[in-house]
Every structure is written in structure tokens, then in C-alpha cells.
Length: 493
Ligand code: BG6
Image 1 (cartoon, rainbow, N blue to C red):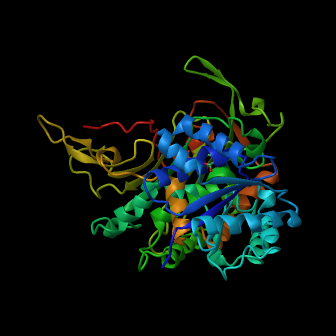
Image 2: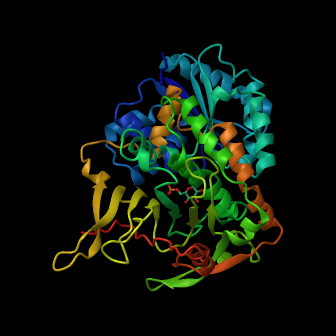
Image 3: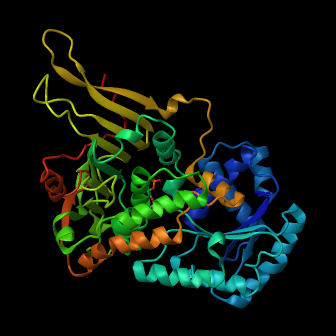
């Protein structure tokens, strides 16, 4: 039987992700009784010790989580720290007695979850250094390794990284985390589609006109200019998070819900994306970069003025793409996907636009039929359709039927990191990206990277707007417009 009793070893323990996401997620799992026998061993170069590490984590938790002194003390007593020079294999020897001591103390039977929350340059190094001391071997308890994004930098480096990790860890031990898959509303997409009989007959090219996927953020690059400049919207959001969301919209029903059959279907979608041609990257892609503006009376910097960003950077902070999936379900249905920083709202949503009636009986401008799936914030599902406007005649107007997650008042919804950490401890890889899908995604986006490298155009857009005008033109070519969602779902009726 799978057990989540284990020692969680976090590499990069003095970094941002550890105190912002990982420790709070573990704290909440502990608080809600989902962790029992466990310890957390923070590892990094900084010369901290158990006490100073605990103190730092305690401060971080006090800032962001609802805590009580008892729970906080109890949780922090499970935290430990080991300074290691993470690029020196010999130094990893220090982990051997530390892990032995923790497994004995917490009766965790050698089960170890490694989390690489480090700069990507260490993703190939850490597995090798662990293997030098046998710390990857599963003869006494399971050993799993979580890899944070970015998984590679392009198709070639992703393959190289895979080869490096696979030398020491088998695929069943590798958990590539994409936190979008941990979001309750992303998973709900599957339940919505596959546990209801009425969507399936409509969910195809015969009834769907087009699909819109938006991952908008109102923030800029904040303190992460250095990282972001080497990444851009394409690598930071599109290649992973948004393509995963697209796969959830487009995939076939898996035979059963388990890691293999689910991920088989995701991989099939990635493989069915119509390869982008030169014409596509020139006419169906828009890249953008935000410029300075005043938003709500405040001056907002342009991307080129952000800390860590070179003054001549061509990195895109926005991208919009029209793409297609070549299979029987979706042939000919355009998927319009966009993402960007410094847009007017923080909102991630999917809009399924259904075809209109074949003949307009009541008015020329028949209301559209759409299903809006709001991933975040204000998580909701809204069905929009036409009903009679009260009064004389038969004029139709758009109304909506809404479901809001907030209405499920008593349910404790796990955050993405809580859910994914728990799944990794339980050995459930269903919501983690599999190597074949990751490579197919890189292969699909490679022409975009090539286009950029060859000097492809990056348009400017003012911070606080919905991206470059070219993005409006991209969708307008087919007579359509992007939805302009606000952070809150508006009630239509
Ligand atoms: C991260 C990106 O993976 O996702 C960030 O690196 C982005 O740039 C973030 O802000 C968005 O995540 P969420 O959960 O806030 O939508």
C-alpha cells in the first residue's frame, strides 16, 4: 500500500519558492491532518542550521498563513536543515547520516521525496550527486524526485535534461510539476466533461465554433526580471501551463482515471497539435512587450525599465496564438490562446464558443451560446444563452446560468501545491507532466522560438491594456473578438 510517510528533502531551501509555496503547503497539509509521520530536510549552500531554518520558515508562515502557536511549534519541530555545496558530489555524503537519522526518528522507512526548487542548471547535477551515494535507490523505501519548471529551455535541452535525469531515476520516480494541474478548477474541467452526459455529444467540431483560452496577469515581472528575461511568456506560461489546460479541454475521455491513461490522452493532444508553419508564426502569432503607463493614477514601469532586464531586451511579456488540433474531434476548430503580464486583470479562463443556430428565427443578432470556465480567481462556470426579452415581440437576449465554487462553502479546497505534494507523496503521478507530452509541447513551440531568434516582431503594448493591437487583428481576421474578462465574474441576469 502507498503511504505518504516520508522525508521531504527540499533543494534550494533558502530560495523564494520554499518559503512562499512549499512550506506553507506542507504546513496546511499538516494542520488538516494529512501528514502524519514526516520530516522536511531543507538543503542549500547557505550556512543555516535546524534552528535558524525553523525561525525563517516560522516567520514566513506567520506572514501568510492562519496559524496557532501550538500548530506552528508542532510543524516547525519537523523541519531540519543541512548545508551542502549542491554542485559537489562528495558533499552530498552529508545527507546520508542525516536521512538515516530522520527516517529512524519518524519511522518513514526510507521513503524520500526530493524536491528540486533550485536554478534549472542544477536539475541535471542533483540526481547524479544523489546517485553517487546511492540515495536514488529504492531498495529501502521509495525515492521520488520533483522537478520544477522550466523543464528544459527548448526541444533539444529538454531532451538532454531527460537523458541526464533518466540515468539515475526511472520515469516512475520523476514528477514534473506544473502547478496549473494542481488547481481544483483545472481538474474540475475533466469532471465537468466526463461525468456529465450532455456535454460530450456537443464537445466537438460539429457544435463548437472556436475555443478561447486566456491566462492574464495584472502584475509585471516584479523582482524576477533576471529569470523572466531568459524565459518570456512563451516558456513561462504557454509551453507548460496553457498547453496543459488546452489538453484538458481537448483530450478524449480516458478509459480510467490513472496516471497512465490520463497522461496517454494528454500526450495524444500534444502530438495532434497542427505543426506551426512559417505562415503561422508570421500571421497567427503575436508577441508583445509592455511599455510604461499610468494605471489607476500610479506610474507603472515598462518591461525594459524593470530590474534585471537588459535595456535592449526583445523578450515577450505577451503572446497570442491561433492554433489547431488535427484529429476527428477538433479538425478545423481554432483555439485562440493568449497570455501576458500587465494586462487589465488577473484572470485565467476558457471560453467554449458554440456555433449559432443554422437560421436566425428571432433576430439577426442571435445571442451566442458559450460556456465560460473560470479557472481563477472567482472560480466559476457560466453558461450563456439566449432567452426572450420580456415585452412585446420575440427579441432574444443573453442570459446566464452560473455556478460558483465559493458556494461549496464547507469544502476544504487544497491549493495547487498542497494537492501536488500530497499526490507525489502518495505516488500518484496523474497530475504531473509525462516526458512524452513535455517533448511534444516543446516540439510544437519550437517554430515560435526560432521565429523569435530570427528577429521576429515583438509589438509594444501599454501596461494595463489587453496586449498589442495586432492581437485584436489576429482574431478579428475571422470576424471574432477576444472576451475582455474582469477579475470578477459579472452576473448577467
Ligand atoms: C508561474 C510563472 O509558473 O506561474 C509566473 O513563472 C506566473 O510568471 C505564475 O506569474 C502564474 O501562476 P498563477 O497560479 O498565479 O496563475
